[in-house]
Amino acid sequence: MKYGAEVKIGTRDSGKLKDWLSKAGTSASIGSFADAANFGEILVLAAKGNAASETLKLAGIDSLNGKTIIDTTNPIGEESPQNGVLKFFTTYNESLMEQFQKQVPKANFVKCFNSVGNGLMVNPHFKDGKPSMFICGNDESAKNQIKEILNLFGWEIEDMGKAEAARAIEPLCILWCIPGFLSQSWTHAFKLLK
Image 1: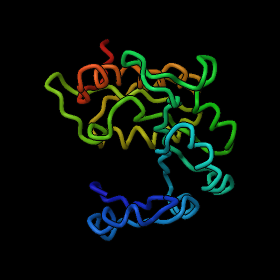
Image 2: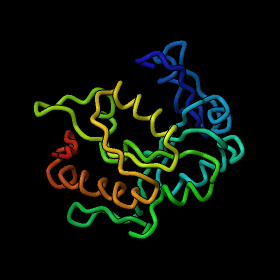
Image 3: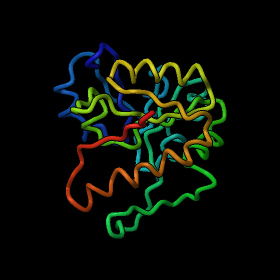
Image 4: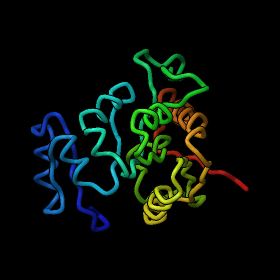
């Protein structure tokens, strides 16, 4: 909305978002997951990893066909972190995003924003320059849409290729969270040096 986009948030409980909606302005609305899926050209999947598959079902698989979906999720298990290290419920041989791509094969998933906190997603400012946002996905057109957003938001883009690269991108969340759990430091990001 900051950049002129109209936004509809899908939810199971619209009452939880009434305060947000009252402050968000006229370009914002709330509805069901299906309402949001039908409304948006670009969708953001921002659900807990173990609930995201059900969220896609509630949105309506057919409604997602042909849509670009920014996958911000991580397959974080229910266990508490061990010495600051999260446990995932996926294996190294299949990412959560790959599972979503199989579930909704006609949608265009782009892994993005899964390795940084929400307070840094838009206009991150670091004294050492722009941080790197690692993305991947099977559809080049969808990735180009997301690259435009990332440029607008102030990120250096690192395109890691097809959906299989999410096997490497998703675990960046584990690494990003360790300083937070161990020293309450949540204001950092990654940078790929070349």
